[in-house]
Image (cartoon, rainbow, N blue to C red; front, side):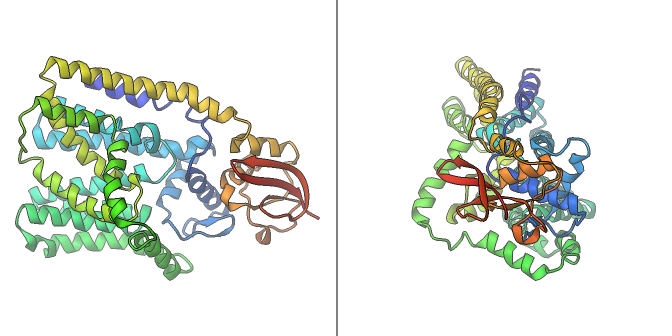
Length: 439
């Protein structure tokens, strides 16, 4: 009952003022692309400011559009998609843990630990970014691969292909890296490499490729799309960065992202017998094989989020053993309740503060609206400040486009250059953004 209570309050802690917090990071790009797709009724070729957008496949946009029928266009529209798949992933973590150990408390604690990893609870678990949804489909694929290995079932193999095909429709080529490396890890662990080229494996491969290919066959320029997806995925491998420094710092970034449980996990080892049960060994091998490409390339910490569920199960096993000690149990409860309390405080205090700041992009867009009429034609010549353009577009009920794609534009949102008569100037950090009336 304790862990059920902790899971419930942790999930509820994500809700206060969720629709008040202004768009952060790439959220506005995700929502803007989906908003344009919905407005144009062109559901295969994403666009941004009216121009083709090739950097990501469209599944996340489709999900946002689906949710827009329930949650009107705004911050909540995309964030509820992430919350949905956070809930699904948390349930799947518990299910996988129970499949491995048949212990309900261990299963529930695995779900709670995943839900309250710092990078999940405070950032990507609710933001309208692709990462949480991608993590669900990749982890679902890994779970199904594990079941397939146990059951040797064609149906499960087909479902794993569907899961990784959906993952590819979210982020492209990284889905196939997770697919191949997870399957390779299972093959190495069970010493059965022949299954990599079995009939079931080839059917799974084919289905995972078929779903993206069906979509690509409907876009105007599939080769441009593939080129950009390839560049997005592999450009980081040979980018301008120090590989040695990255390999030193990346584990520290991951440790920080997984707080507080990365710290509690190492603390728990003091109270447990150091042993590695057979249930965890294939998971650990899958983690390290999938982790290596991100460790050696110029990757952000969130890129390993699909591996968080595996870590949650591993951490939970040792933490549950340590809970037999009364001192550790007090530490665990203090950390768990403090983490959830901080998240509640974050939603009730920080989110409204961010919304009310004079130089927040949301406030700037609302101020611009005072000088405009809803029927005015407005262009956006400031793609780097896409949040401002998106907010103005949401206020108008139609997305803004670049000037060369906007017929009869009377006004423009401009950065770094002058196109017309300035109406008002805004400062966002070290950048000037102008609202201008065009001649």
